[in-house]
Image (tube, rainbow, N blue to C red; front, side):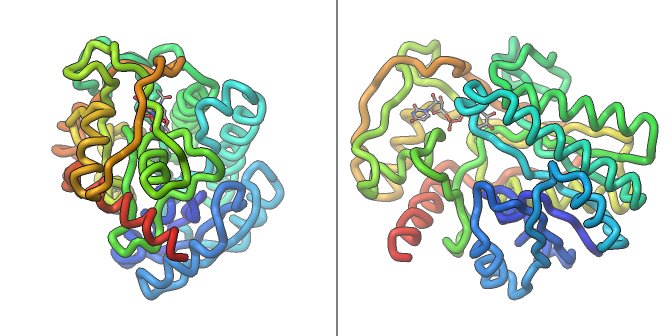
Length: 338
Ligand code: UD1
């Protein structure tokens, strides 16, 4: 059974490719390598023993996308990761984000329609909720005005898929990720941020290994147990496994509606200081950090109500925060020794 994984050499994509292969799926990766490396394909093969098919092109190119669907018949489902994801950059270059994230989705949906591929799993984000009024946040929580063009592209993408499914055979599972962190236990794949990382965990591990001088903790005056902001961190392998379940569900026509939406988190909120403490404990490293002002655009606290995913998808995140931080540290150590 062939599955197309767009963005399959990226962070979440690569972990998902491995899980799909280990569940017996044949994977075709499409990636333009704008934020990842071809060598990820070799490392996927090292883990699974199977080399995925790799096609390098940009999904914003309509002709190339339609040609791809001509070339590969019999694709059973698509998992669409390929997108830009840097919140700050999206504020600076909104059109770059709207063009890349939306044009690629439209081309993909056209290609799927042309080839009669019905099933798509889409990478959405908890950012669609903004600062929710009630915690934990359920899938029914209202979609708030987006805080960044990046977040807006996720909201619009969800609507594009929903509207498309009303007029053709498209069926979708929209997965709203909370904060994916950590790396594969093999330390062969993980997050590879280009330049200075924006996200907390790569910044922590790069600081501990000496690439960065110190971590800035953005704000300690939030209304939380220690004053620092709270997120629902989820291990990337737990997240990857949910994609396999979502694809299985659609292929086995177990989905109850044409569009289903699930939160993917652990249901636990941890503060920035909780994350630092866990890192120091599992790595044995003392982290150099400093409290600075809040980062504009950050919400105070958000964590998932995971009951719908647990009960309906039959999926539950298993790894603890310590597991996540240890795997992130092992990955940073492996990168150093490359
Ligand atoms: C953001 C987006 C999310 C997106 C993700 C991927 C929002 C609300 N969230 O998550 O949709 O999928 O990025 O790029 O837009 N922190 C520090 N110091 C640092 C870095 C982060 O203290 O150097 C803190 C932040 O203030 C935050 C927490 O760590 O409280 C997590 O930050 P980060 O890893 O950047 O993720 P989000 O902003 O939650």
